[in-house]
Length: 265
Image (cartoon, rainbow, N blue to C red; front, side, top):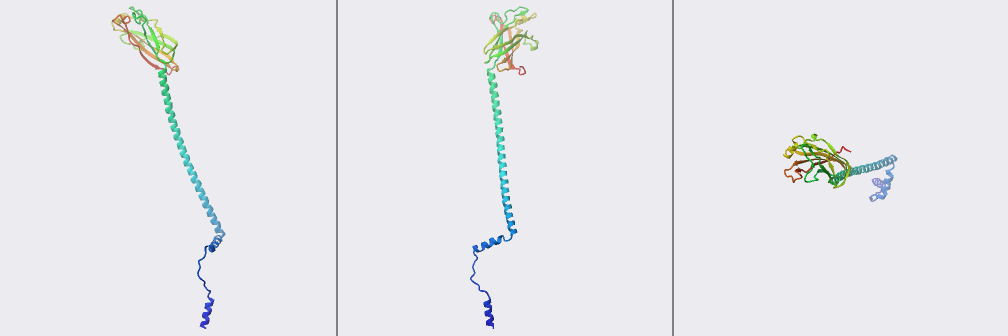
């Protein structure tokens, strides 16, 4: 009985073969098949994959836009620096051009001057002198510049005294009116037609070298650069003890100051 039971149990138990490892080819299809057995799982997986793809695309686009803005900023900065450097160079070039033009004008423009003319060395600048009168002298007006002077006008003031009188003490006389053109190195002459009246004792003071004869005036003219200019001048003559010196008259060089009046047209 026990033997029979043992045999039945042995037969009823299934036979076991040798243990074998599952092959990848056998399990892979099952996994692929079982991966999406649940439709909702498939949908959620595809949705997650789509979101990941969209997120990557969005991040890539944002990165490209950021890089583009960075490049645009660098271009704008470079452009601004280029404009600034250009303005600086233009300013320097303009200043150099202005300096060059002014230098050229100073070198080329007209310069008018005036001096007493001595026709006869025996009489000096004054052809006649009495106790009450000194004949008006002649003046030579010269253009010492390199371009012509135009529309020249001359005003003259004169007096006698121990020192050069103040300008307000002079009597202004216009000697030349609108001399049209004076060429470079050219000159013309003007005459004081009235002369100077002497008071009692002034001639003696002149001969004793206690007084001098003064002339003071202004030349106005327009240069070739359409600029109105002027030359202020002062000259003086005193009595010389030696009659061989221009008929007793010693004439000092003319003192001149040049300038311009920008407000004049």
